[in-house]
Amino acid sequence: MAKLSRKERHRLLLQKIKENPFITDEELAEEFGCSVQTIRLDRAILDIKEVRERIKEMAKESLGKLKTISPRDVVGEIIDIELGSYAIATFEPELWMTFSNSQMVKGQHIYAFAESIAMSVIDAKAALIGIANIKYKTPVFANDRLVARAELKKKRNNKYIVWVFIKRNNEEVFRGKFILVAIDDENKETGQTGV
Image 1 (cartoon, one colour):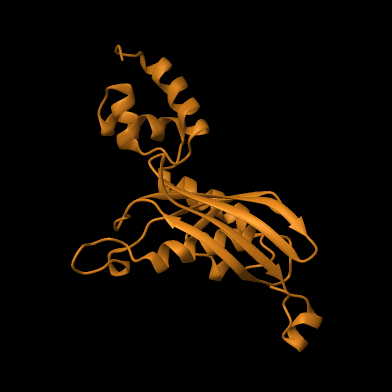
Image 2: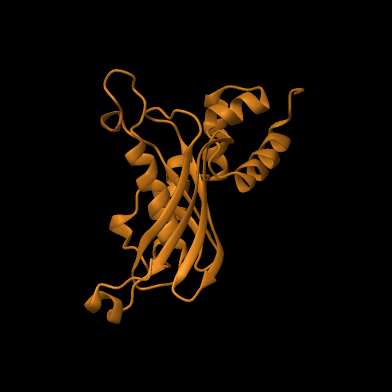
């Protein structure tokens, strides 16, 4: 990319961050052909928060919309949600979540992330996973930045079909089809879920 004027770089910076709030200073610097320090200075001038702060802000706004799952039970951070339609979340696995000999993240943590975003998108007081058809496509490592999208595909009676796709840098690392069963007070008392 040819050297941009400061004014043009600021305009493009605002546009890029609006399009992708997850973009890092390093990625922006590479895209604009400048230093990370230049991007940080530009963000300060434009009063744009760093990526972690932008994500936290988005997550805070989204947590109030949750119904099926409590905010403290969410794995990762939900940054956008439309109840009964879709949800988007981020997750950065930590070193303690990995196998010690390979540094790959254990599947249970990826599954927990997928399950919590699937639960978050449905409009029910309580629910359980009735059936899960999942596929781990490529290994995930500590500190990988994962972005998940859950989409409610179908609702029939007390059952919800939710697809979850988890990506790292636009590469799909996990996908799953979950059939969630809403549990009402009557189901809780009898133990009948209709799975």
